[in-house]
Image (cartoon, rainbow, N blue to C red):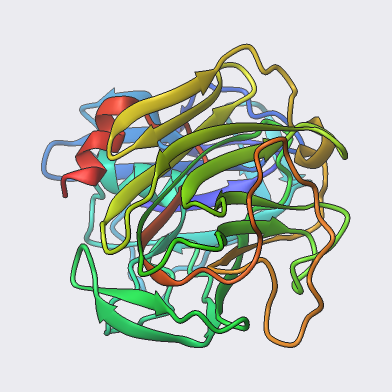
Length: 338
């Protein structure tokens, strides 16, 4: 199996077998080719979805891995009468896994799960997705979680976890963000998930995506433009109670908010509602448990009509997942009940 991210796919071929999808330029695309010698089958995946299947391929490459070489960005194609060509593209995360025919589920995760922090003792701050974006934290410790261990945020003002895990080039913005929360106190509010273009929590784009009001009501919101947000109010969060939160967004289907696997609220017909920041090509940071990092001034960010009280969150966060796709209710329910 080989997988790569490319803005332009000149050719995706093995034994002159090609996929059927045209790849748009200036959009990150995940492509994978799987050959299974046990059933003589080749599959081409685009963004985690099967694009083309070829059966009866009985002549796989059997060269020596010690002598084989891989050339990226230059190739030849007898099928298209091209003696040589240079690819004009950006390529990232190129991977070959010999002796392994990855499953559809594995490839879907490789393509669409862009960040997964389980916060377990073994590699507490490690990203367990294919992207491998490590995180950093301050004022946190390990405690028991929904699955194995979790990250405990104290009530001090400088506790946080942060990762630069929001991808570049978000022009066709679609995502699902999920996590477990278990606050030890709800009075005074607090930031659960903060998004910012600057590492210190500030920037041309910054807002609390998940947070709490003074009485502990869960709020989820997204930015429409520099002065307007769309926000939903969830339940009043009880202390020492685990709650699963999920936000699903796409330009086509709008915004949906799930609590414990059940749809809590939805706003359809939000075409291009995130244009203000989906075209922001700078890196975005996700900060958990606070709106700022240690030593930084309190950020001046977009605020919605529902009164999130930004600042330090006191409690436990576990199983943070970020997908660049829309998960449906059944898929979210499966993750809730893992």
